[in-house]
Image (tube, rainbow over all chains, first blue to last red; front, side, top):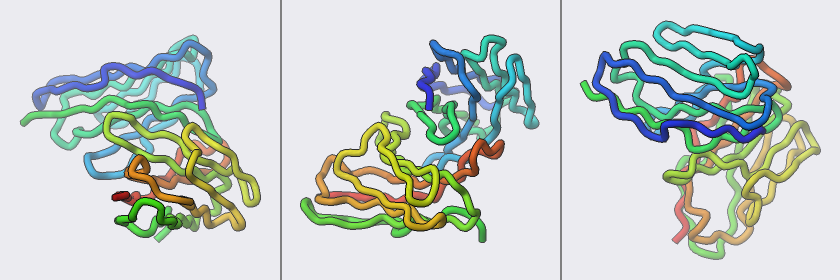
Amino acid sequence: GQQVMQIPQYQHVQEGEDFTTYCNSSTTLSNIQWYKQRPGGHPVFLIQLVKSGEVKKQKRLTFQFGEAKKNSSLHITATQTTDVGTYFCPSGYSTLTFGKGTMLLVSP
Amino acid sequence: NAGVTQTPKFQVLKTGQSMTLQCAQDMNHEYMSWYRQDPGMGLRLIHYSVGAGITDQGEVPNGYNVSRSTTEDFPLRLLSAAPSQTSVYFCASSFHRDRVGYTFGSGTRLTVV
């Protein structure tokens, strides 16, 4: 997998607020995948982006892949307590390099 | 139920003991990987396999061995457990270039005393 840096490492929001996490690479990525890990749980695959400028939506979640395929973002609209967890953005196929992810805490 | 099965879920070892963490998947996935997760460190790749009979090292392979004699199974062996190997271990599998990403097992929480 290719190394991707993710920011912020941690964010605490009030329920209803929006949230965005960003992933950046110094090299062009073949793809980017997004995973969510709930506290005490295992990572769960959310989506994969492969095309330059690609935008995909899953209900309140919007995923974007940059035009240069070097960055990606996940935006959550109107967060809910069920969004709590750590979000990861690894790249690759046969191997994935996960990094530390972004931990999201949502207060009711 | 289709998925990745890890056993055991919890294990306590004494320093110097050896053990095998089991991982099995019934989805006919070619790719399988082992990760360890420590607080503040994210997920780090230990070993991976792209098919039966083929394995390779990841980011943190020291102290661990793997084998892939069948498509379904990918056991992780701790040769001589050390306190630094206290961690949560996840096994994951995927098809080649699959759009549905990796499926993870529920993890093994290992404590070495």
